[in-house]
Image 1 (cartoon, rainbow, N blue to C red):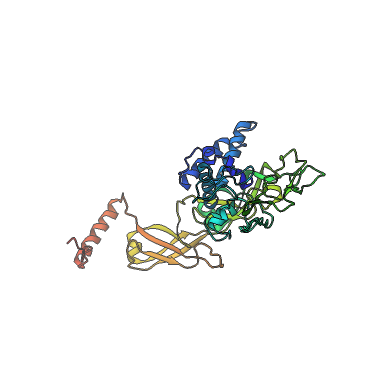
Image 2: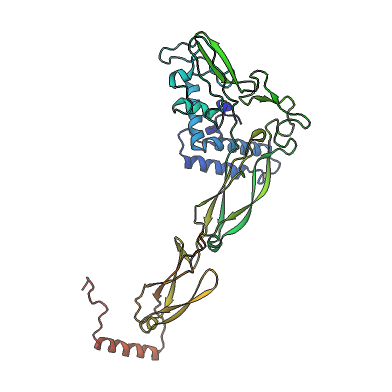
Amino acid sequence: MAHSEWAEKDYYKDLGVSSTASAEEIKKAYRKIARENHPDANPGDAAAEERFKKASEAYSVVGDKEKRAEYDELKRMLASGAYSGFGGSGFGRAGGAGGFSSSGFNVSDLFGNDATSGGFGDVFSGLFGDDPTAGASRSRFGGRGGRAGRRTQRSRGADVETELTLEFREATKGVTVPIRLTKPEPCESCHGSGAKAGTSSQNCGTCNGSGMVSENRGTFGFSRPCADCSGTGSVIKDKCPDCSGTGRTTQSRTITVRVPAGVVDGQKVRLAGQGSAGQRGKPAGDLFVTVHVKPDKVFSRDGDDLKLTVPVSYPELVLGGAVTVPTLASKVRVRIPAGTQDGTTLRVRGHGVNKRNGASGDLLVTVKVAVPKNLDEGAMSALRKYSEEEKRSGFDPREGWEGN
């Protein structure tokens, strides 16, 4: 959709949120509508498909921080009546702006000619394309008409977001996962051109392919996006019947996502060019996959290090020994030095999560004494004897404890 068509849309209403909604509220509203009205979940339901399309279009604008700012600014100006002609014949009457009359009023005269200088210049340059200088014009004082700039470039397709849930060990090792998405794709009938098979687009006769038209009003001259071609510089007389001239149709397809080793919960994987297709053959947006990682029963993570807790007996800590613990690949023997304290963490080098440089983190093994619940009389007798010997040796487990 051309940005100039934003004036006719109420994207907040399409998502069921207020114009002051937070980014998180907007995202939640979109996900709810998309989940309930997805074509795969409502086969043959045209109304649900239309709600899905409207929500997707709305989120592609107000779900993007920069586009939302441009959209809000445009709607604010339209509500004030300052640019009542926008979207049809261009910028019309400018009311009450510091005493300027409606004749020949040019926004650039008030906020600067350079579209990259900030202020409203940035807003209007963003409304009609990616290139802030595309289609920009310089007003000329003294009755000379403004010259049209370069042909306006329409923006690429919208970015698409989806989610993926992995098991803990899949996330640490990396995995390739197929996901199915429904999104705008290049029309197969016209190959994204928007023109009916056997025909092609033509230069707009109104603007001669520049995407801009110039007007001369009294002492001021200015340029505006051509209304006949929506600033594209070209028109399609015979539109493709399958995509209505947009060059896109909503399709479902499977995309293979390669999740790198070591991804953490909440991390996003970007697939360039796998988002929504652009109109009339413009580049596609990107696909962002948010990865959720399920907790593991044995392992947890600390950066690239793996952590686990292994139960041991009291004699194993006092006398020393070795225990076998799992790793991501197999198992490893860990030596417990004699006199190891309960809760001590032992480090096993190179058995953690693989790093991008080919190295690996470490395995951190914490030993925790397991207290027996049921001992036979022989074991209890031996334990009582040990307790007496311990007292005679002068050992006090609470020596130095602040509670004494």
